Amino acid sequence: MSPLELLRQLPPLLDVRAPGEFKVGQLPNSINLPILDDEERAQVGTVYKQQGHDAAVSLGHRLVSGDTRERRVQAWQSFCQDHPNAMVMCWRGGQRSGLAQQWLSESGIDIPKVEGGFKALRNACLSVLEKPNKKWWLVSGRTGSAKTVLLQQVEQSIDLEGLANHRGSAFGRRLTPQPTPVTFENQLAIDYLNHGYESLVVEDESRTIGRLGLPLTWHEQMTQAPIALVEASFAERVEHIHREYVEEALAELDQAGLSPNLLQQQYEDAALRIQRRLGGVRMEQLMQKIRHAFEQQSDHRDWIRYLLTEYYDPMYDFQLARKVHRVAFRGSAAQVTAFLKNQP
Image 1 (cartoon, one colour):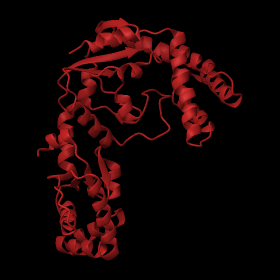
Image 2 (cartoon, helix red, strand yellow):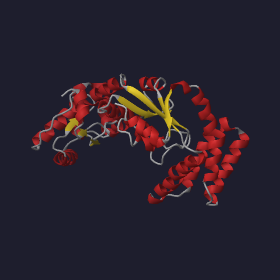
Image 3 (spheres, helix red, strand yellow):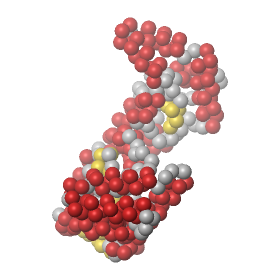
Image 4 (cartoon, one colour):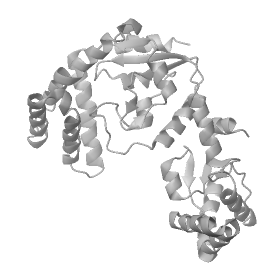
């Protein structure tokens, strides 16, 4: 099976790389059950450099023997029993996945391995991202226009902010961390590879979403694509932001048993990141409004209105003026949704 075909089918993947490797980048539908943990891998690597391949392999077998080997094989067996179509994978599809395959076979379970390993699949993902050859549409609109909600109703869309686990603005960081760049790109490539439409609809984004950068080819497409512009009233936008950034965020904290102070600190930190654009006086006013809302449990809409009026809307007007010639359709969220659904 070619790497591209494997990415299309994406069977359950038994990833036997070390936890540190898995943390740097992973594929969806994979689980990390390492044959060597990070410390063991470091020891084997040191011996390999100093004494060569055979000595490193010998050390690996000594480190993973007896009860340690038994526990790891049992974990693999459990995964394979729960996922009969699983495949085993290491970095290059060689020593580690081959050994795991052998040990599983000795226990009565035959499992195919990913030829070329994670590296081959990673390279396939990068090749997919280099050629995003579709008819692109950008959904644009002022902050709070519920563009992400709209995207979720359009089958031709890919939700970049959802994949990046970030709302795409200075205040857009979520309570859970973003994926690593490699993991983000892998998921993006797989979503694109399985995107069965001529048109691709994405939200208008800057080059980065939080700390994650979009592939250069994708950003280039986005700077040229026609725009479907969502128009919403100021009051509608304030209510949407209040619901998503305050009500839902506080409910998420409460469900996790965490203090609302974490959200207050997050938004104060976000305000500091735009301090240069706001200037000293407006920055202080915004901080006072955020603190008052959280500490006095008053209406958060006050600081939301201030932030839109003093920061987001002027920035949006400036940016839109530079690409207004690309606006091919504009209307309410319902009108834009209907328009985009009619694209092939």
